[in-house]
Length: 327
Ligand code: ATP
Ligand code: LTN
Image 1 (cartoon, rainbow, N blue to C red):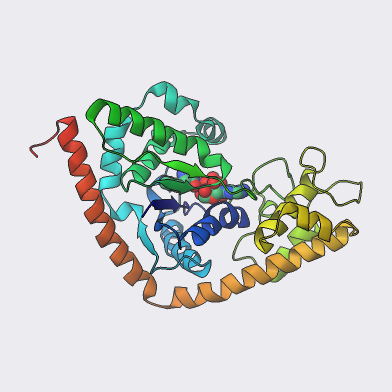
Image 2: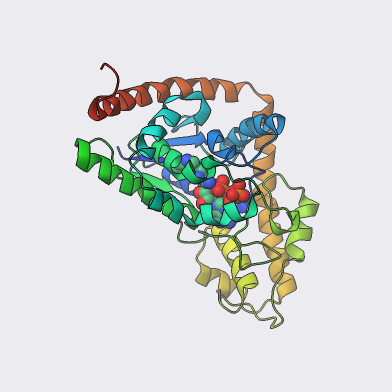
């Protein structure tokens, strides 16, 4: 059975962009593939974090995975920092990655402009991500478009390693959703919605109240034409709302356009808000139940046990091939 793997950083409250770009794909594919869904907490400290808040978010993100439909019977769910092999493999892969490759990553270039003291971790983060993927021989990695370049780097590193030492890693492929690969900010629909945005009006968070969701969608930036059709170039705000509707209703953009062809912006926004509210309230109800149960710890203990076993084998194979240690 082919393997699929992804993770979402506990760097803030999850948004509908994270749901559509990352989690929903995993939910759809979990029937078909052996699935690994983890919390990449080591990635999160590439920029400064409050330790108390970070710890809370780790548990919260697992509860959200479950509430969004990630089935613990079909997925191995685990925390990255509970598996020491990730960072160790990352080091070995760092030594097989060129500075030019790391420097070229657009996310690094963007994020390093925003942070004052740029950590070395921010530069090497995509290599840790490669270790996360290659450790489990993932065939597919569902991500939003912003992470495609990182998965491609993982491919390049794997190809290089296999060529030098013999077949060791499966070559992973990114899976980008057809609809919703990049949900945009509500107040600036030319930029990606992000969970660590300073302006909370830009993002719909999975745990937002109904009132906030409605307010944010009703005040989303659009244009003055008042005609609903899909045109990313000239009508990015409307295109973004149509995309959100299409992804959450599981219907094509064409069908959404057809549904709203007579509607004005007010009506479109109200319908998008209704759909987002009903989707998120359903998720929130389940989220609170999971947060109060002991299930999360049980699932994570099992995930830790299983992934440590797989990772140990892969790591020892790598050590042997590279000529390290005594094995
Ligand atoms: P941060 O603000 O900390 O950079 P983020 O909101 O951009 O976080 P990530 O943790 O980098 O989110 O991404 C988690 C997953 O969600 C990745 O697969 C990413 O591609 C996807 N994703 C993030 N934002 C969006 C978006 N706006 N549209 C679609 N997919 C997204
Ligand atoms: N960099 C990713 C999170 C991440 C990831 C991974 C995703 C870390 N390791 C491995 C897929 C596979 C992000 O979303 N920012």
